[in-house]
Amino acid sequence: MHGTAAAAAPGLFNLSVGLLGGLALFLFGMGQMADSLKLVAGDRMKSILARLTRSRISGVMTGAFVTSVIQSSSVTTVLVVGFISAGLMTLAQSIGVILGADIGTTLTVQIIAFNIKEYSLLLVAAGFLIMFVSRREKPRHYGTALIGLGFIFLGMGIMGDAMAPLRGYGPFLDAMAGMQNPVLGILVGAVFTALVQASAATIGIVIVLGSQGLVTLPAAIGLLFGANIGTTVTALLASIGRPREALRSAVVHLVFKVAGVLIWVFFIDQLAWIVTQVSPAHPQLAGADRLAAETPRQIANAHTLFNVANTILFLPLAGLFVKLTEWLIPDRPPEEEPGVRVKYLDEGLLPTPALALDRARLELLHMGDRVEEMLAAILPAVLAGSRERLWEISGQDDAVDYLHGEIITYMGRVSKEGLTEDQTEELIKLMEATNDLENIADIIETNLVSLGIRRIEEGVRVSDQTQEVIRGFHRTVTVALEMALLAVTQKNERAAAAVVEMKTEINRLADSAALHEAKRLVAAEPQRLAAYAVEVDILENLKRIYYFCKRMARAALPSVELTAESRPRFP
Image (tube, rainbow, N blue to C red; front, side, top):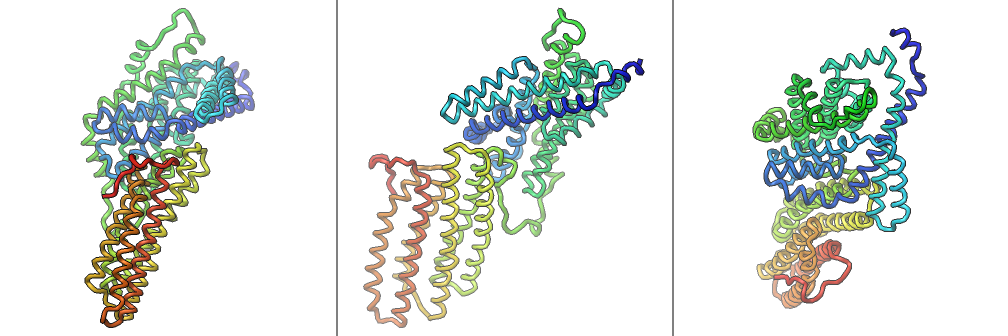
């Protein structure tokens, strides 16, 4: 019999072209659909994640919803890592979101299981029509998503047609019979998923094999178990060289998947029976037609049941998983921690510009913390500090320059992605704010430090009265910087307007300081002219710092001017 099957072996070229071409269309469609949905919904996803993760249950629901929209559990996991780093979420809270993200990925497989290949070109045509007639961005993105969905079904149809001749090919049937061994099935599914970096692609191919009668339901379940493990490889690779929180998040995801598979691998037959009972049956059909009608939904339901059951099982044990992960990935000894590094920028979010820009905004706040430290330290040093203290403050600018370069480079990479008009405007404003913040650090590092050195070299002493005037000016500028950072990093328009309103206060303080300096100019003190020059230059540089704070704040204001009634007053 095998000799007959071998004689009827399908053409290798046609089979390869069909499989590879269909897989290419499938993956391209997945990418198109996911990218379009991210552009449409990305801005809302981060706020939903931030607000709805206060409990484990809400975390699961949030993770499932967000992942089902942006079609990427890896993106959801990376976003969660950022919240952990920012102190907005604990690792224990993140576990609910990670488990929910696994449930969210099952929606894609449920859609794929419809396998409506006869309507695939209709979906492509409808999506193109929407893109062609719409002038607004959002409907055009929906059109692109529809085209991607059409390509998914078209690719599956092509793969199914290519595999049809294998139904009677003995060697291939023998190889598929080997998949009855769950260990082999899990290994094959994990390796293939790690290579293509898309568990939905692996499960899509399994659905095609099942609908052609080339693989049994228990064997298909073994392959999808492997796909669930393989999908964690992307996050593990992305966590290499990243902060410990990122590595722990990736490892806890892997532990969940492996533990779930180890539990269920002994109950594959029982799981297969359950899904056959809960999935639609078509007894009126027979043979290959019945397989094509029933198997796809059974495989999709097995995938969903596996992830939902694991979530129910593991969620109460979140604390134990946190301890296990912290034991596996301990904190670095203090001497191993780098002096300065980026905390929030993540390459894994570049394909999702809305979330990548949010990371850049958080990193800008990290950079701002460094600049605030410099501004707080410089005044005591420039008025009465030692030469060593001044050089120490000057050296702090190296960290600011490093973070500035990393943020600008990251945003340059974001700009190469598909951005909406609003995202392009946001990118430009963030780049300008980053440059303004770096200019403030340069004023401190170059001008104010030099004035401190000059004070020491010329033997200048700033009087107590003048120090108090300068300190008042410095306090106001410090508040301006704090509020400008609040305006930019949190899109706080009231804070931005308050910084702009401070111009009146700054001018009043400058006039008052100028009058004070004019009176002090005739004071009978040694080095009076030299002291006058140093004091005036300090005030002038503080005023320049406010100028850059105001530039940063203006970037957070809408294009329309605020009315007098709506303007917040600076206290």
